Length: 159
Image (cartoon, rainbow, N blue to C red; front, side):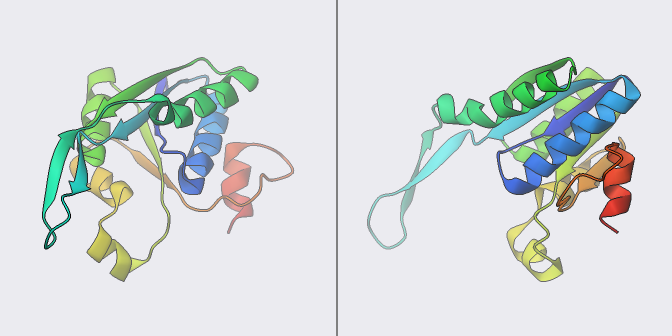
């Protein structure tokens, strides 16, 4: 495995995915490519009867914060990484970028909303699974690292 795309948005679930993905990259000698997707447009209320307007999203420092945190974590572990900020549909952009860089694995976090909530709200991890032909690792609630410290041991410790 040479290249792993690790999606992050700063949520606890994506932070778990970053930690797990970096551990796996360390074991495999892979490069970690951290991706965060922001919306192309922000929806604002115009104040009347549910009417909304779309304005182009302006990228700011907050949009970069989860990527900088992930990059710092990888650097602490001695893992070479790079960051990419994309705009648009999260799942579609993650899959397209994984294809562009030839990622061997896509790592995403899952908030674990459950079947009903996911059906109603949608799920980026589920959409990535549907849209890609690449291997996908969905990290769900890795609460604490295992004593042995390997990414594989972390998964086994959560069972």
